[in-house]
Length: 455
Ligand SMILES: [Zn+2]
Image 1: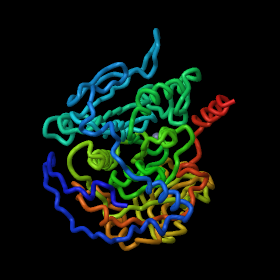
Image 2: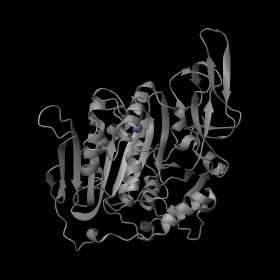
Image 3: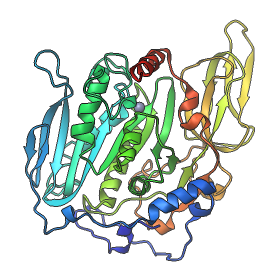
Image 4: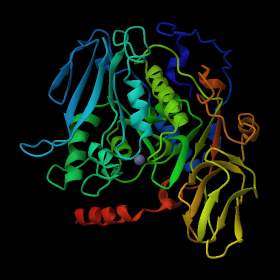
């Protein structure tokens, strides 16, 4: 299942540092195939069997025209920064958002990279701001329009109204990422979703959507993807980070809507809302460049992690006490069975401290950051690791934190065959990796609004 670019000789063009060519091991079996639950395995295998042919429109012989977006044209081999209105209005606020378009000199796929669909998740806007900087885009840089094959569209802040108010939501209190593909005759959020879907997202071949955990918790960098979508599966692996969660995404989310429309889409999650986690930003940037390299949109070879955890299930750690939480093992920690993860104290019972220990060993991919808990509140999200333990342990630092590819400097290039795929079996409780966190009061109103809309 090595991605197709592995059979090509490495191209050094555009690389600033030559990458060593790893010794290829041709007959290494792919470990994921016999470890993910059987039904899911069959779905994924079936999807991957479909051949990958370069579409006719990307062949060199086809004419490569200017790229049209929001009524504006971008000439081949150029970069253009535009403002795109979220609302098409004669009077009133039109909510312009910045978009950078790098239209390559040669044909190729359209890749749209978005941040802050949730207005208070700032890892995306920060990573995309760095990505749009002259240090990355320009002649002889990582993204040189003269060498780009295809079109890269960078949308650092999708939900500008939410971003300005430091809120996850749109001005009507709705979650934009539950309203795709939208409806032009419905509520404000649904209209914005419709416009975005029609003009920005659906004319894409690939989408990378950047997120952080919602308020009150934090995520270690991870990819969420429907692995049964062949192209999404490839992008998820190409991104080059260790943790990949296989799930469909919530109803109305950009990812699920794109998936249903046959468009490749992956969600990156890193850090938490209202935070700028430098490691999550750095890994996002490496990941985006990795996907672009893997798609041959930009020259060079993607860096790859030593192993991947392909997860189809998880374990929730919960508090059995009410009070104030102190998490002792940060997101990204590998924890042993019975290890002390957090304590809970209650100002009404001074001197009393209760312990929360983990029922199983694994990787903590998300933790609560808000101290207030009641009995039953989830305080952490754990991938139980049974297979590949040795491999995982080799990448832990002295504190037991997983050192992610890209977190310790320029990540290495290696053959896809050299990556160990480790599956994490189980189920997502409630159907989504986020389901057990529940909704905060602000979004409970939004859920009701959403229900009402569907009648
Ligand atoms: Zn989000």
